[in-house]
Image (cartoon, rainbow, N blue to C red; front, side, top):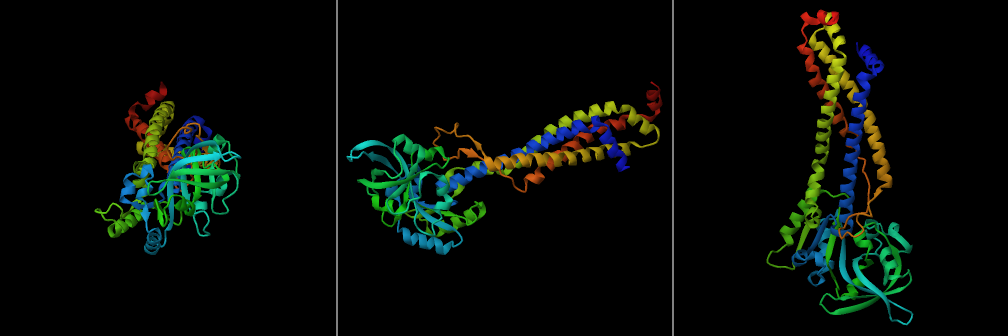
Length: 424
């Protein structure tokens, strides 16, 4: 019987081809959109964690209230002791200090006079320690466009777009004009070791990457840093573990009466991505629901058209003694076979296209050219195990649901009228 129905499906394309194509395109779009949304959110979270907040971030209560202004006069002091405490209390995490600073980058000519200058948005990280995670987290080596990694104290990297705007090349001297932790003006000379492009428009326009010890010296921030960021060892954000860690730290060290006491925040809280992360959790369900509804309506209509076309066939089967329930079951089985086959094809096509986009990405830099947000310019899809199963829900449910609704008409046929219908 199964072979009989399969042959019927293969030989009568009108019964199988249109529903199969509908399921194929529906599943293809559902799988691709799911992988794309995973990739986009993953890129945003990864970029925000690496360049901005870490998976958790420790800073003073006062600094946290004005974090957008990089108020280094409110920075953490006693940095070495705080780092030691964090590494002892949460040894599985990777902890590293950072200082964010702003200033004017002055490029002198051969006489030492100002040739050109521009506003710089700097970040000081641990560049030289052998155990430093920063080169890996910021992917600095891959980001270098011209020049090389800083090799010695005083070497810095600046954004390639920024360097071209200042008309300066690696090897040149640059003077940072800024303010110290205590509010006085300071100037410090650096050597540009190379230029970088991170693919984040907000950074590439005016980025300056320096070693944290050099900036501590330049800004009078001895044993101090604006923030300490922590990363999970697998570089994946774990929301529940991060919340537990922050609660434990704040319970012990955060004093609401002391604005310079340290507090720990999680990535969603520090970056404002909480709503986006909540959205991505429900995005898979939303995508499936939309495609199940849309495809069910289309397949229901296809089933009604097929029932009209097969009106005579169903009448004959009823006339020879096949009961309504059995005919109804065979229609469901046909739709199930089409749903499974179309879901397999659609999943393979969707995963294939998503994998290509995962490797090559899609460049949106023209949209973010003037953006001040810390978002990547190139987005990738992300193929996960869920991509291989998520398409089967809309693919199978919609075909079975559409056939179930369309097949109800079988029970409305009256056997007593069948021969009259056949004679007609």
